[in-house]
Amino acid sequence: MIFETHAHYDDEAFEEDREALLAGLPEKGIGRVVNIGASLASCETTLKLMEQYPFIYGAFGIHPSETAELNEENFARLKTWCTHEKCVAVGEIGLDYHWPEPEREIQKKWFVRQLDLARELKLPVVIHSRDAARDTLDIMKEQHADELGGIIHCYSYTKETAETFLDMGFYFGIGGVITFKNAKKLREAVEFIPLDKIVVETDSPYLAPEPNRGKRNNSLLLPYIIEEIAAIKQTTSEEVERVTWQNAEKIYRFV
Image (cartoon, rainbow, N blue to C red; front, side, top):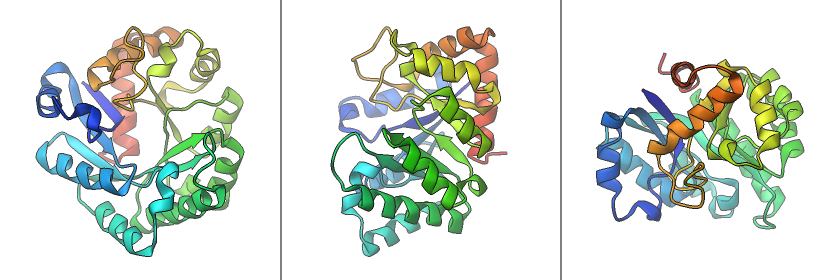
């Protein structure tokens, strides 16, 4: 069975066939799915999916690109969602400097607040970091994120940066990008990262692996990602599937 550690099945891309797709996942080898909240609205729909499907769990957080919507009132709502019995993490949270908005100081403020929330509730975190490696690491070190644990979602930095995250005890979410022909830097990082620190994810509906690149992603495409990791690690797909399942259970605290 495959553990899908990061998907967005609340996304409007699944409006037409969401129920049929999700209902069929377990019989096709997807044993667990963590749906990730990224905005206040998506946290609410994530909650509904968790309650509808036994194999779907949730993480609640506000993506850095959505942090301008946060205030004390709705942050209190976020905290309540994070106390749900099927909530496995605070996320996705972090920094995204690819676009100019929201202002970096707003992103940093709510990144710190959400790390504090994870600490208060004793939950791991799912970190989003895009074009912001230095500030992400600085905040994580200042806030002792190594005491929380979690996943660096859609890892995209170098193997040298990976070493720093490894030293903090974090796991690495590897998705469809690993199958892209221009993913040399990521392949080098995956070759370096121990298999027992890797989890697999799709980020559905985004970042579909080859040969579906550019199309809507979903968890049924995870075998392409697993096969690529197996080739890099010179092992079998079955071994990658087994180890990444165990890793996901550890970081999301099923064991």
